[in-house]
Length: 345
Image 1 (cartoon, helix red, strand yellow):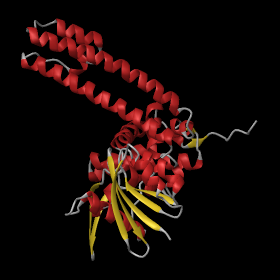
Image 2: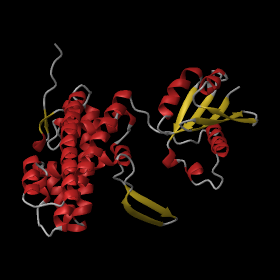
Image 3: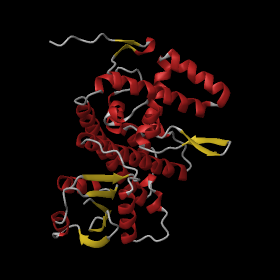
Image 4: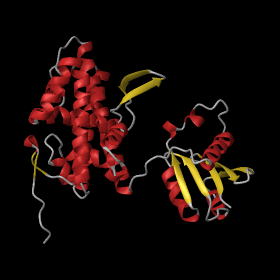
């Protein structure tokens, strides 16, 4: 007899609801360490189905349990409003709700990517955090100059020589001088760290299927290709380009009631780094592609530059979809001509 097991997972413990096909339920809370997980696994049966909400350690939890049950489902929390908006927010209630909806096969499941894509995505996110920290520190230094009535361009501070020359041109108070010295040291460390991460990211990305296909698109470089590959994962998971666009969060929100339908701003769901990278690549690609340029200018003339770049980004994402799906390699992206497939040796 199949049991439906809902798990409310935390970093130090987890609450489990066992729901049988007859409707009987049992709830228990176990520690995640010190034998708690082993005790849970020992009580599992081969025909059990388990569901757990996506958290930082849910993929690890799934790996530990998967060999002992028929199925482990990872729930997409942003699509499962029952828990997020529950008026009775307790671990037992959440585990019970997960088990119930699992028994009805009504849980929205999250996509699970390969380990290589997860690792690459984590490294890219670390680089993105370092870049944001660098920008924040440069803004802080720019603010110090403004406090003393000194007008200076931020671009001057981005290079080491420009930073040192600008700082040396003014007499700073004791605390300010220490602050600037510490910031300068941190900026140099961040710069070297970003260089190392970028080198490792691009080297790793070159080993992944689809890399050569993506960089043949004018506007997509090695780092951007790495972002797209780790975000998309297996292209076969997407049946059509619209599904990929929704995954990137560049599809409009749609609200419909009877005959009335309202189309709003884009959803912005999904990976922000990938969405930003897509827009940046689009700004470059439209300079070289007559088709993308004409499409952008047409939308811009009627709906404005903001909507035009998002619409053009979706066109480029369609190209990315078919490039990965059909394994295209462009000979000349501007004329949309492909390289001939090479015969196997």
